[in-house]
Image: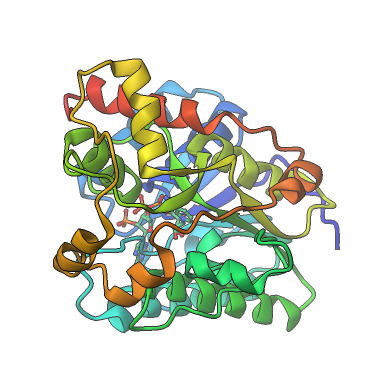
Length: 352
Ligand code: NAP
């Protein structure tokens, strides 16, 4: 379709208060766009205070907040009025403390995607939807790489190993993205561009400690793994690059398809070593790995099942990120910089 978005129309960002979305909103405001941001509860200062500050600081663009819930059909309609571009980031992101995966993860991710995209089909101005999916919709377990041709995950791969009972967050992202492609094919008013970030790091614009990206790094830098790092590997990408990728995906007429975002794969131990070089003994960082037998004993207490450990422990992964560079003209900040900037941000907020 190659739509050209009129820069004078508002851009809808769902889940505007989130870790990633806040950066998208900030960049859009800075570039002078009008942003319609949705939040679940605009009366909660811990969710919206930073957006209000941003609105006052970034005088170029205008920010208007709307209340909308993924599970409330039609609730995005008002915010979508007049928008040619919809950036749909809202989806629950947590990997621990899951009691009912269907209700907590899959329903909001899947029904929420249907809700937002069906509203897009009923909103005649919408020309493009950019969906925040995840690398978790590309692969579930590190061992899935055995099914790839050369051990490298690309946009051609889909996660087939996650389920409601095994890696349910990854499952929620997979079913939601599949549904988005299905709905996109059923109409020809708007086109879909998907962003598949690996693990996102970098400074947070809000004061929230409980975003999963923030929480995971706080565990590492705050000493939870002091006696030994889990032998787990992640693709890492800076939140500022993820935000720019969404904006480029929205405003590049020829952009299409899925886009893995990952600068580099690092293990927890690699991350600890990067931080040790900078902080030289000031942070309680692990110096080695947790021995595998101990991981099997203590892992289940931390919510890591034996199946998860078997399919992920000590198995490095690799991503091909060339599509993001070619289709979106994205340049990556080094993963190490994302990590160091995250920790500096946490220190400046008194969290470490
Ligand atoms: P986050 O800060 O926790 O943001 C999640 C957003 O989803 C919040 O704005 C939240 O709104 C919204 N949300 C959750 N349930 C909702 C519901 N029922 N109705 C309306 N909104 C709801 O996490 P994030 O890291 O920025 O994640 C944003 C997106 O990126 C998600 O789609 C996530 O799957 C994806 N992603 C994240 C990473 C990563 O490493 N961070 C990697 C790949 C993909 P409230 O403010 O109202 O709670």
